[in-house]
Image (cartoon, rainbow, N blue to C red; front, side, top):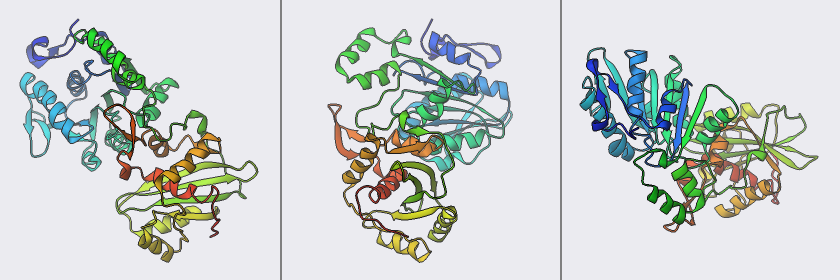
Length: 414
């Protein structure tokens, strides 16, 4: 069997159909009937080359309409997805034209569109009602939970199918929302995993070289397609043991609220304390934008009704004006006691290590950030002190702000 659908390996049949020569892993994925099928596999194993053909088959099955092809970043869109898509749909199938200004492939005969987008600009995903979607490199850090949720909204009307193709990069939403659901028996999901060597053209010598020279976690992820905890994960002590099914919080328990303000993203997380066991439960979360401070504050106060909130902590030390604005709208927020980011991280880590904090398993955003909040890696595969994409982890910042006030610090009463 041949590994990939390159022009020499594709037989174009009368009527524009194609006969592909797929390897065993691709065949297994192609036969999947699940609504959400994800190929989580090693590098150069034939994921991206097959994606456009899956989408072409889905278009033939579903008929005229809009479809999505989404990759993690604009660079990947330009260098990887776009060439594959145009080669298949324009050069081989020949019924489609590329409209660069709109970033769509267009079929004039029935006005169908394939909308090509990058996930690190999720607003671009909100413009269509689509019938199916191919997501390439959806395991990368840049492909955030918000983009995955946006894709699902676009497919909701038609209950459209998804193909995801990626190498695993972290322990975020792909692990939580897809892999874990599949492992737990959710028939809407199917995960197909295989190593780089499933591709018959992948050199075994290269596979063994990578195994001998790379850190074990990186080799397992990048060459075997297995989820492992990557080096640099800040909260590596956060495990499934810290997850708990939601329950009703007793009326007498105190509540603690952390807020990370922002013009585009304001995160609010809610902790409830079991005073008898001295254990905290992360119960609620929100991440919202396009609202005024007045609206954010009023929404927070509304959620605080019938909750005994004893501490509201907002922002970094420098965010004085934001605290004043919230205070003027009735929320008695306070400044952080600890300026240093690392000291705040240490306090969260202490709660995790001593099993004094648990997270409701329904909080997908918090869980995603726990699984992706990490440090940059140097050329030798070692973590540096710098936090990768720190400005995007709003929930983790909100958690760090409030934990400063529940662990060994001065108490502030509302």
